[in-house]
Image (cartoon, rainbow, N blue to C red; front, top):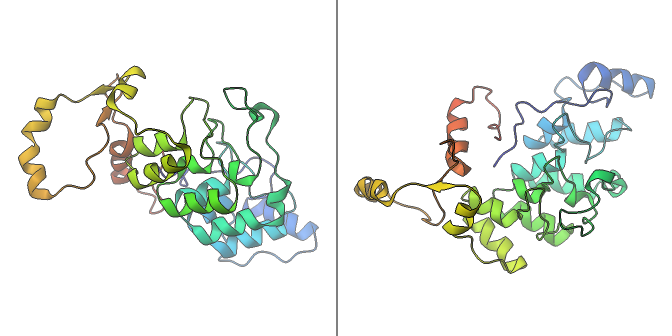
Length: 253
C-alpha cells in the first residue's frame, strides 16, 4: 500500500532540504530553486511533481533516484507506490539511475541467490523493491517490462510482490505478477501457517445481507487479523486513510 510520504525525510547531508539544497546550489554556481519547487524528492515523486524531481536530480550531484531517506525509502518506491508513471519513467531512465549498485548488506536474497541489479530493483530495509509497494498493474508493468524489475524477488520475510499484492487486496496486480512467476494463488492456509487468524464464517454470514445491498467487488482474499487483533492489508490502510490529516498521500503502515 502507499508509502508514508507525510513522514519521508532526507538523510542528513544529502542536500535535499531547502537550506542545504540552496547552499549546495550556490556552491555549484547554480541559481536558487524556484519558490514552487518541492525540496523533498521523495514527496515530490509520490505527488507526481516532475519539475521538482528533475530540478533536484540535475542540481544536486549527490542525490540519486535511488537515494534512501531516513526510512530507507527511495523516490523510485514513492513514484511506483502512487502510480506516478511519468516520474517513475524519468527516475529510471535518468543517467544517475545507471550508477546504482546494491549495498553490501542487500547483495543477496534470503535464499542466498544474488539480488537483481538495476534501479528498478532497489531495496528498502525490509528487502522490498518498488514492485512490493505498487497497487496498480501499470507501474508494475513499467518496472518489469522496460526496466528489468524481478517479479520473483523475495523480501526479508521471504514474500514475493505477488503475495504482498494479495494481502493488500490488489488482485489485478497479484494476477499479473503470478502470470509471470507461475505462483499459485495464496490460500487461507498459507496465511494461517504464518500466524494469522481469520474471522469466523458465522460473523461473515451475519453481515452478508448488508453486503449484498451495498454491492460487492472482487471477493478473493482472506480477511486477515494478526494475533493481537490488528487489521492488516487494505483494512488497515483504510483506517489510516481516514485518520490522515496531512492533506497529502496517505501513510503506509
